Image (cartoon, rainbow, N blue to C red; front, side, top):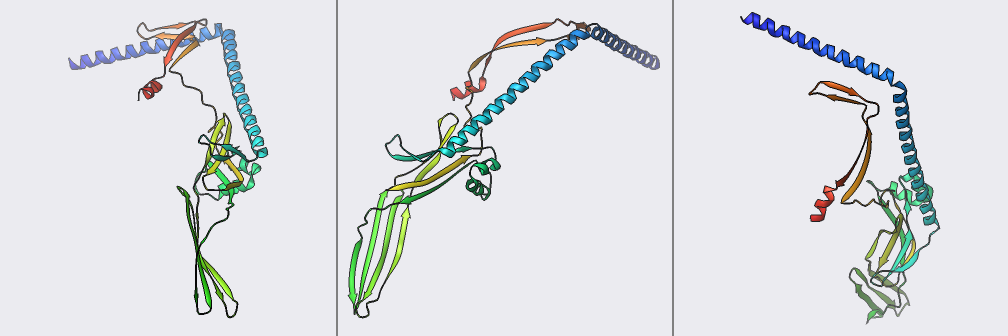
Length: 290
């Protein structure tokens, strides 16, 4: 009984497998006949799709070329720009100058070799670099002086200690000596300390125009030179606004379909469909609620 049952199952499996093979062969034959019959249409539609793809690639290359041209123009403007003193929102002076935009150090070296060398000498990945020369032109400084004479030597101690604002101060102290007998004099500056707080960075005043800024509340703070670069051309690239809801229109071509329930294949060269719908940006919706 068991042997008969096994034989029956084996025979049924072989029949089922042979039936599947015949089905595949028949569908393959149908597909070949379909392709031979509609070869010109298939080649035509394929050629159109390839042409559309090539046009999209060309548009992408044109976009990259336009972007490189824009960056080149901005770098030329930065080369010709000079330090401008502007007024901040709180009414204080600030030094501004256009920054370079590059994608690699070799490009920066062509614009400013000294700045590129500073990047090479810096450990780690550098995204932003700023270099500046500043100077302080002090007004007349009133010193606190104490003098005394021991034997024939007159010693004069002097000092200056001033806090201009938070993070900005100057401290001096020392002495001078004069010998009345031999006329010799000497002096020592024991302390000469200057603290300067400054703020610097790169801001985007206009899209695609990064500008270096440098400011300090230290009295008579002067900026003699100012140069910088963003080594990331995408940093100031205008970002496309992400809308909460976007509308879309799609066109598709489906020449072959197969119904697994009915086990039936269907070929149609003219099966072209279109759809119109709306998409919701869930990430922006979640971020808005947070």
